[in-house]
Every structure is written in structure tokens, then in C-alpha cells.
Length: 123
Image (cartoon, rainbow, N blue to C red; front, side, top):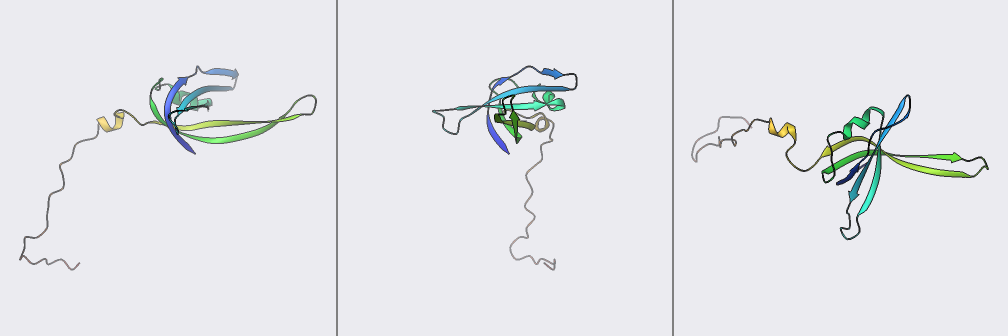
């Protein structure tokens, strides 16, 4: 799944346990600009570093997996939780670093025959 929006907030990396870390990203999603939605995503483990280069106001495209799981408390009541887990994020505004290093090429030349010339190609 993917969504495009504007970064509202990039959270600090949280070391949940010795072997598990996560980081939150809040994206403003404005399908209806009058009533924007603020969507919380999680970047887990090594994906937390993906958020290092983003700041509030950046336009982004977030690719994520929707995850859900049950949790049963001591009384036996089961609750369900959903999470949106980032697996890729791209900037969609400004000049990407790759584009700045891309060489400029001339427009293709017109190599068609002049009127009256025969074309010896068989196709």
C-alpha cells in the first residue's frame, strides 16, 4: 500500500528493548484539504534510519504494510490493534539527488527520409 502526503512530524528513535527499536512518522494526508487526516506510521528496526533525511513539510510517498494483531488482557477481554509499518519512503517534491547527477541529453534528431527518397529497410 502507499499514500502521498506531507510530513507533519518525525519522531525520535525509541529503543523498546535491547533488540527492538522503532520510530514514528506522522503524515498529513489531505484527500479533502478542508479536513486533513494525520496518519501515524511506524518504521521498525533498520527501517528507522529511512526517516533520517525527512523533516516537517516534506512531500513524501510512503509505502507500508498494514498489520493487525489481537491482545488479550488479564480479564480475558481481547482488543485488536492495527499498525502501518513503513518499508519504503520517497521524497516527491524538490530535486532528488539522483536527478541532479543525471546527464542532460539532446533531443532525438529527425532521421526520417526526405520526401521522394526511397527507404531500403524491409520494415
